[in-house]
Amino acid sequence: MAGLPKEDIQSALRSIALTIQSVGGTVYKVGGCVRDELLGLKSKDFDLEVFGVDLEALSSLLRSLNPVDEVGKQFGVFKLSGLPIDVALPRRERKVDSGHRGFSTEADPKMSLESAATRRDFTINAIYQEVLTGVLVDPVGGAEHLREKRLVHVSSAFGEDSLRVLRGMQLVARFDLEVDPDTVDLCKSIQGDDLPMERVSEEFFKLITQGQEIGRGLKFLSEVGWLRYFPELEALQGCQQDPTWHPEGDVWTHTLHCLDVFAKERLGDAREDWIVGLAVLCHDMGKPETTVLENGRWKSPRHEYVGVSVAEQFLKRITREHALVASILPLVECHMRPFQLFKDNAKDSAVRRLANRVNRIDRLLRVCRADKLGRPPLVPEGFPELDSLEKQAAELKLADSGPQPILLGRHLIAQGMEPSKAFKGVLEAAFEAQIEGEFFDEVGAVEWLKRTINRNSRYNID
Image 1 (cartoon, rainbow, N blue to C red):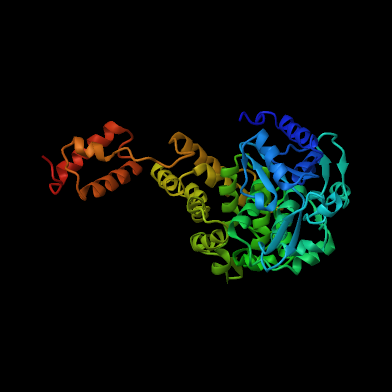
Image 2: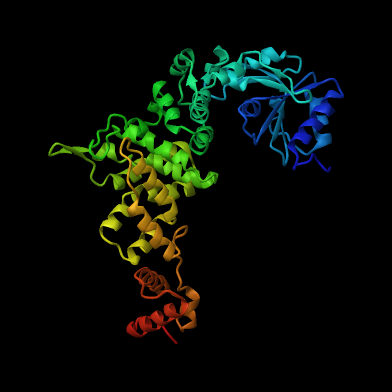
């Protein structure tokens, strides 16, 4: 099977619509792809809803066009392999149990479009566009709400799916929306302790990597009382700061400002932005435990170190990805380090140690920049501390990676050492010497090894 053209999504959509039309069905785009098009944005994913064709016929038609992942077939949903296209039948949902997944779902190709719209979450996501004609069908007024920048729930069924509160959070941040008061009240009544971590992670990912005003999204989460599910965030509220350095207010307010700065300076690399954005979100989580009033001034000694375990608790609420967490925690721990290094006129060895700890100094610099700019109305005249570290890291070729060990086990064997437990100690000592600048290349590393062997008779050498 050749499949639909991957390089031309619009042609693929048209082919699907024509094929389904040939048996009396009608295909509509719906949801985010229609919303984004009305906003002048390019959509990466397309949700199609098919009316007038039963489940088995739709499955057969789609398989005649392209390989299909039928993992969602029981719910009337088909994913086209290799294409960002999901095809679904309208379906009736009935709440049968508590929780995000407690639904009985039945595909119904004879359902009216108006009825199908009522099962969606927000009106701006319930706008339909017929694929072949381009005609918009807007049964719940979503286009008008989009123009008015209003986020409004579609129906009372909204409250049956708790994930929709987090979806509201990221939509507010992405599209600068005001939430309808009735929607706010409804969200306040929804319990959120039943959500699978993967879905929570998806919504936070969109908030961090796509939100234009991330702070607004988190303020919405606070307004509806959902910070109780993220106590590490809730604890930031009311945590005092010295107004000399933080005229913007408490740690919560500062964190939101920092995130908005970060959003304006994203790289567009989703993975990098996800790591750095979460580090910005978590960077001051140690302050609630360390803040004290001392001689009339608020101080948070060692908050960056205390914050590591607090940030880890939060991150484990939203992700199971150990590598992601491992990338973020050193950024939290070290977010004050560039300023101390500048004050101490740090040597290259200190920069190497920092690069070894955080792995990516460029990530740390982004966190620190957001931290420094997130204090309105204070506007720094410049970033000498960060500029100095950036220059030093570039000269040492450590801007986007940590130092890699030069001396390896093969070098020890080449010098006559037999593999043993002693290898670990030698290699660790060698890396420490490398960090301190005792050698810079392989030749220097081998010379260092020879001197070390001569000084240590305990090494077994033939």
